[in-house]
Image (cartoon, rainbow, N blue to C red; front, side, top):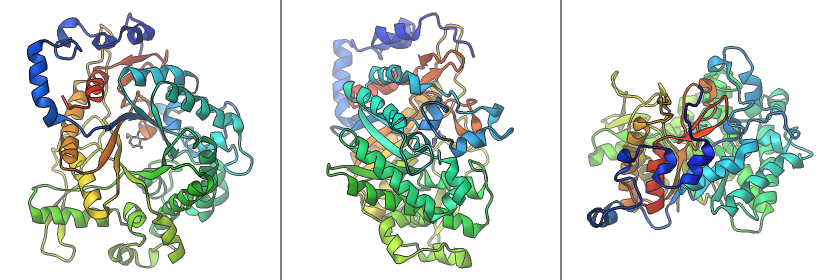
Amino acid sequence: MESKNKNSRRDFLKIGGSAAIGLPAMQLIGCNNQVTALEKKELSQNDSIRKFPDNFIWGTATAAYQVEGAVNEDGRGVSIWDTYSKIPGKIKNNDTGDVACDMYHRYKEDVQLMKSIHAGAYRFSVSWPRVFSNATGTPNPKGLDFYNRLIDELLANGITPYATLYHWDLPQILQDKYGGWQSKETSKAFAEYAAYVTEKISDRVKHYFTLNEFYSFTDLSYGLGQLAPGLKLPQKAVAQVRHNAVLAHGMGLQAMRQVTKSTLEIGVAENIVTAVPIIETQENIEAAKKATRELNAGLLTVMMEGKYTDNYLNSLGPDAPDFTEEELKLIAEPLDFVGINVYLANKYVLAANNETGYELISHAKNHPTMASPWHLVSPECLYWAPRLVKELWNPKEIYITENGCGATDELSDEGQIMDTDRVMFIKNYLTQLHRATNEGIPVKGYFHWSLMDNFEWIFGYGIRFGLFYMDYKTLERTPKLSPEYFKTIARDNILV
Ligand code: NOJ
C-alpha cells in the first residue's frame, strides 16, 4: 500500500511531542505535553491511583525473522522459516521474511522510533542461523556483528536491550539432520549456541529469554502442522518435541551461566495457557489455579516444578516422552524471572465437583475478537496470568514479554492511521495489568508487541501488529495513533 503521507518519516521524528504523529491540532488536546493548570491538578489527583511501580519497564518487542530481512547477507544460514515460507500456499499471499522491515539495515532509524515513544527497553531476538551458518561449529562473526551494532546503538540511546535467543528460526540443517526438535541433539546444539552468544554480548546485555513461546514451536509446528516445519506427528513424537524444547531451555540456561562471570538475569518468554475465572469467586479462583497448572503441564509447569504432573503423564500413557531425573533437574534450573506472552484468556473456568476440581468453559460463539481470528478479547487475562504465575510458582519477577493486537490499519487520505481499536485494546489490557501491580504482583515490565508491523508468520504481511505502520513497498515507517498513547504512558509511568 502506498503511503499518502506528505510528511517524510524524518519530518515526523524531528517534530517531537504530539505533532510527531501528524495529527490535527484539535485532536491533540489532552495528549499534548502542555496542560492547563486545571488539567494539571486533575492529573496529579489521579496520578497516584493509576501509577505503575517505580522503575517499571516500558518496552517494545520484535523477532529476527519477522523484521530483519537480509536473509542472504553476511553468511547467514537457512532457517526452517526460509524453507517453509517458500512452499506455495503455506503463507498468506506467499509472503516471506526475505525483506520484512529490512531492520538489518535500518536498525538506527528503528532505535529512534523507540526513543520517540519513550520506550526504555527493547526485546529483540538473535537469529541462530545468522550467528552459526551451520547451527554449530564455526561461528559466523559477521552475523554476530549485526547484534553488536544493534546493542551499541540501543545503549547509546538509553534503551536497555533484552535478548531472546530463540524465536522459531531453527537452522534448517538441524531439521534435516535430526528432525529438529524431535531430537535431543537440537537441545544440545541450542545450549552451545546460547552460550556462545551470551559470552560475546553479556558485557552489555544483562537480560535474556532462552526460548520464545514453546507451545507455538512445538505443538503448533510439529503436531498441528500450522507453523514451520509444518509437521503433523503422532502424540508421542509431539510430547518428545515438547520435552526436548524444555530441555534446551535448561541446558541453555546452565551453559549461559557457566560462560559469564557478570550477573545476568535469565528467564523464558512463554505463551502461558491462562485459565481465567469467569466469575471471580474464591472457589473459581482456586479452580483457575489448578487448571492453569495442568494446562501448562508439559511446558511452563515442568520448567517451574521440575516434574511432569501425574495427570499429564497419565493422560499420555505410553506416549509420554523419554526423560531422565537428571534432565528434569536441568529443566527446572531456577530462573531469575518468568516472562509471559499474554494475549487472551485461553479458557474460562468454573469450580466443579469432579476429579480435577474445575470445568473449562469455551468462549461463546459471539465472543468478540480482534482482527486475528484467534484473538478473543479478554483484557482480564493481563491480571490473571501474572497473578496465577505468582500464586503457583512465586517467582521473584514477572515480565509481560508480549501483549498487543493485530489490525487492518488503513491509511486515511491524509496519511494517518487512527488505530482506535489498538488504543482501546491497550487501555483495557493495561487497566488489568495495573490492577495486578497495584496488588503487589511483581510485574517488572511490559513489552508491547510490536514496535512496527512485521511478518506475522502464516498470516504474512496481511495483519499488522505494530505501533508504527510499515509501507512494505517503500519501507517507510509511519506512527499510528497508538504510539502516541504508549508514549504518554511510558513517559509518565501512569495509565491514562
Ligand atoms: C507471539 C509471537 O511470539 C510473535 O512472534 C507473534 O508475532 C505474536 N505472538 C502475534 O501473533
